[in-house]
Length: 387
Ligand SMILES: Cc1cc2nc3c(=O)[nH]c(=O)nc-3n(C[C@H](O)[C@H](O)[C@H](O)COP(=O)(O)OP(=O)(O)OC[C@H]3O[C@@H](n4cnc5c(N)ncnc54)[C@H](O)[C@@H]3O)c2cc1C
Image (cartoon, rainbow, N blue to C red):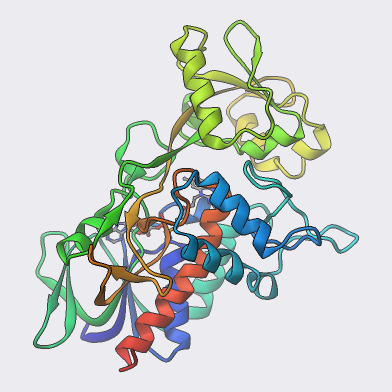
């Protein structure tokens, strides 16, 4: 690899989206990744497509769920730019032409759109197909990034090796760090490497003590351990029960953090079952289970559990890093004094500030698509001599 215009570190949706934008802007692009990250698991994303929804309501819901921890300017970009996704993606629709929507916890109206229940994998496949042969893909773990001021280029290293390549600008898209925990639904390669590399170049971080727990991650059967069960089932009639069979947390509008706390409280009070609690979908209408939630039905059936009849044993697990690199609305990585590090951009879960202290389900996928594009376009522009 010689000197490329844009180096993207990370092969999730934020990284590939950045690569797409950079290629479209005429830049040469290399992308280095050591896995697929969390993005193939994205089920649905938030886009305000309903008539009674709006950018303003989306902003309001996100700020409210973030519990005072969101950077308003970033939230406004997320919500405003999300609207454009409806022109770009063929989201699933009902026979009457209306969008098929789910209502995530924290959204005041149904807002979650998808494509065949797995928009993450769908979007990744689409982008990779379109960019085939136009992006140099490098497999491996980037371990260091340095800036050569005489050449105005960044060099990166793979593993313990020597410099593996050079680029005029970089998009950091290495995702979060929840892969570090023993019980998590993230793959182990997600260790926060990108944050470490950027900090060594002077980047500021924020909210590094903030991790979102997914309340309903399978504890058993063994083969499903660590796989989350989607919480939108709560709106369709699913309920929580402790080991005595008593229902708790009947509030369908509780947020993910409140649900996780309620589950931990049951376990700590000695009312837990096998370290978790029962999540019971038997009252969810069978036609919904067999359509919207068919992936969960099939996964459990393959492990010998019929969720039409039996509850699922779940516990909260680290799911999303909420903190990360400090960026501005152009995805430029900032130092502690607020100045941008020339040539260094970031997008996706590696950044902090968008979700505050509690992320709405579906907002992360939207974030990768919106901010990945901004970061890639910005990095390409800079590499081509723009500002
Ligand atoms: C099970 C599950 C289900 C989810 N479902 C949803 C959902 O339905 N809707 C939603 O909005 N959000 C969902 N999320 C959250 C969402 O998946 C993530 O926040 C999002 O995918 C992050 O995208 P990303 O591109 O920033 O990072 P990732 O997709 O995690 O990608 C990070 C990339 O960086 C690479 N990488 C990391 N370190 C290095 C290194 N040192 N060198 C080279 N490469 C490196 C990884 O291999 C990977 O390619 C879910 C999360 C999980 C775990």
